[in-house]
Length: 345
Image (cartoon, rainbow, N blue to C red; front, side):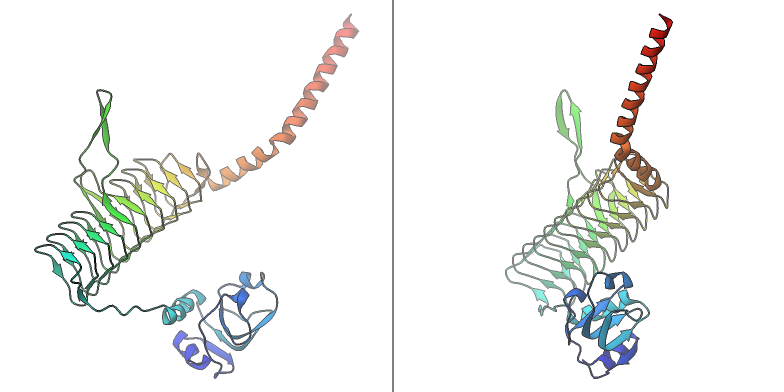
């Protein structure tokens, strides 16, 4: 592909050589003459030395990067996605059910789907069209997998769980394991049977080794377009709205409701039976012990609104100085008291 063709594909304006060759893109800081690179934001340019590259895709003219061909696009993020899709590795996987896979009675597999070796599919499972199920994946009885899904190796989908269309589940994820439910009776913990299910709506992505527990009763539900990172734990009966993003090592305790458009940083902990409103932002390593109204930004442990948290942190770091000043004041007051006592005598 040449720069002129790429500019047309991206809907951008070309400045420079339309015949400059387009190669597989590389990180901007590593790019040299002849390479293809992206400048997503002017801020990224501050971190690199002046240089010359072959083809540069950017939202505005760079200050210290020369390019044989500069493609100016309305939205560099969309341009990046379109460009990387051309270079994403495409696996040639023939459709059909492998002879080395096990498929239970009453299970239906849609046209174009591939069930790869050593997968185990239970009874009465519904699998949509053009779905890929990789080796060593387990799908329990009565489960439903939609169209155009990808279940990477070692995924577990529990009995009666539902996975919508265009869902990607990465290796090691567990959807529909038992929730952590026990009653303490006569000094011993007695297991509560977990008879609910998990529903993953359309266009979700579940990271490697994430765990989403089935409900005790009813559903644990993940809303449309939500993205869950690696090693995230979602407890039983949790509901998460649409287009929410949750970073790695976050844990959400049972029966909490998370709204739509929420953003959570890594290692967030959320207590049970809370309500997190729409469009809330929770900073990394925050501990949430109370419900949060819509649109708020929270951080810290115990988490509070971001502004309040930052003020308290500023005071915290000033404590040694404040302590020194307080000690001096105490010494001064003690000296004044001693002087006063001597005068009275």
